[in-house]
Image 1: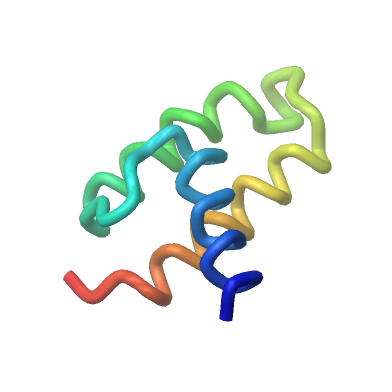
Image 2 (image 1 turned 90 degrees about the vertical axis):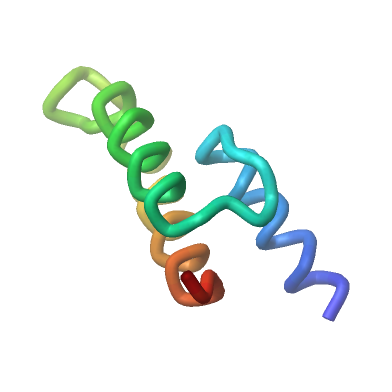
Length: 64
């Protein structure tokens, strides 16, 4: 359980948002970060994949 919670905290940090953010806030943060990290825009592919994984994880655990 602790590992899962830490994982979620890391996802919030990666997206640059606070815990408990709404789905809309998560989506907006993802889009903002994706513009910076996307490989087509000169970003790192591994960083972009980590960002996407964090985004998907938070969407699945967020209820609203």
